[in-house]
Every structure is written in C-alpha cells, then in structure tokens.
Image 1 (tube, one colour):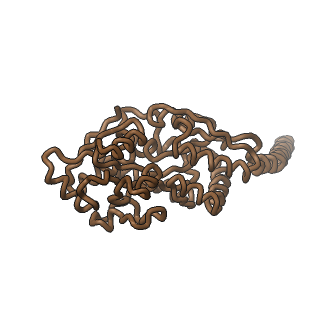
Image 2 (cartoon, helix red, strand yellow; image 1 turned 180 degrees about the horizontal axis):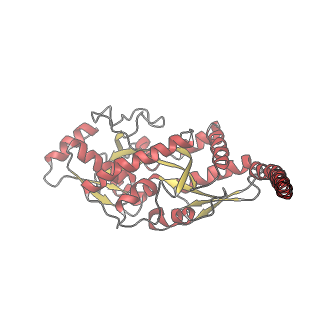
Length: 336
C-alpha cells in the first residue's frame, strides 16, 4: 500500500515537472521568435576585401546603401584588403554567424584563389553560406587599333603563326581575365602569352599606347575607349552580347562554342548564420536588384544585375570552383 502511495506521488511530481517545462518553453519560444523577427536590431558590417575605389568596392557600397534603407539599419562598408581578398574573407569566415557580418564576395577570391594560392585561410564552401548574387561583370578582349586582326577568329589564327605568340595583358596573375585567357588558349590552341599588371589601369595604358597588343579586362575599364575608337573590341566572353556594346560579338558567335566566363560579385555570410536571416537578406537583395535605378547604376559599372535564390548562387560557386581548378593546374598558375 505504502509502495503504491510512493509511486503515485512520484508520478504526480513527474507530471508537474513536465507541465512546468512545457510552460517555460511556451513562454520562451515567443521570445525567440520575436528576437529572430526583430533582426536586425543594430548596424550590419559588410566586409569588402579590397581597397576603396575599385568597381567591386563601388558596387558593394551601392548595395550597402540600398540595403540600409530597406532593413532600417545601417550597412557599414568595412574595407579589409590584402592577399587578393583572402584576408578580409577569412575575417568574415571566423565571425559570429549572427547576421551582423557579411562578405562582398568576388569570384577571383572565392573560386580562383583556392587553386592559385598554396594556402588559403578559408574554405569557400564549408565556411560560408550564400546570400545572393549581385551581378556579372562582362569580360572583353580588346586590341590596339594598329593590331592587324580585327576579330577573335583572326586573332587566334595570327597567334598560331607567331613564333613567340601574342602577348595579352590583365590586371594580375590569377584574376578572372587571366583564367579566361588561359582557358581560351586551352580550348583553341591559340599561342597567347600572359603579361600580368598591377591593376587594370596600367594594362589599359599600355594597350592604348601600343606597348602590348591585347588586354583582357572587365568591360567597365574598356568601354569608353572602344566607343571612342581608341581600342578595337574583339569579343566578349558572356553568353549574350553586352547591352552597352551591342555590336561586339560574343566568343561563342566568333566560333568558340560554350565559352562563357564572367566575373561575378555577390554576398556571403559566415556558415551557420540563421536561415531566417539568409532568407530575409536574399529577399531584400533581390528587391534592391529589381530597382531600375540600381540596375542602371550597376550597368554603369559594367555589372549586369542577376537577382536569384541563395541556392542558385551556391550552385554557381561550386560549379566555378570545380571548372577553374583544371584550368589553373594545366596552366601552372601560382600566386605571386
């Protein structure tokens, strides 16, 4: 009898404890939900892993300003240059995954650096979660007007006839234009010799002056010279012609099938950032990119806005990581 009494009392204690636990949970969950729904409650830091003033930095500042308006909190640009973007990117990788630190991600840093640097202080796939792609910067191959070949097909043929090949300049070793030039060599047999510069501006000065015949660069740095006739555009390596230069054919149209290489920029967050935050950021980014004024301002920078899902951006990152590795290895490219 006494044993049954103890059992009954024990069951009552357990039942009451369970009820109290459930009550505590019911009181806590709304608070957690409200905390998530309230994000952001303080300024957000957008790390740009390059010096101020370049196209990547300028596009990041434009997006930061627009997101600040939509989120009701300031998105502060924090320039952390060094090691071709590796330093600033690594700082974001180890940041608290709370939605208050974001990375302006550049394809050269995220999908090329892991192949050209002996050691990279982050893992692009493991240490970050995609927020969304901002846009694609179209790449263009330009020549000095005195250069005899006036289109891509003739340039390739001419390069093969030159014992020493043809030199092409880019903004530096391991950048997207360099990788694109090496892929063009591998796909067509063109005899091209890479000449790395410390920035696209120096390369542009040399091709304008006739010191180098060709430069592969982002369209923003060449468009004014093409329109003025100071440079001849041989082709763009985008899927479609650039709206800003509609008369310039694509590489595909010029006889190099399935050759599409752009330079992209987007937003990443530290891995394990709450899904609710990523969904909100992606929605707000896409709304910003749908604004005609923003699209026009990005176009002026040579960037075509590409709103889309975080998942689609993540797939592109993985695809580029996989396809650029063999190109880098075959060309023997190493970071300076």
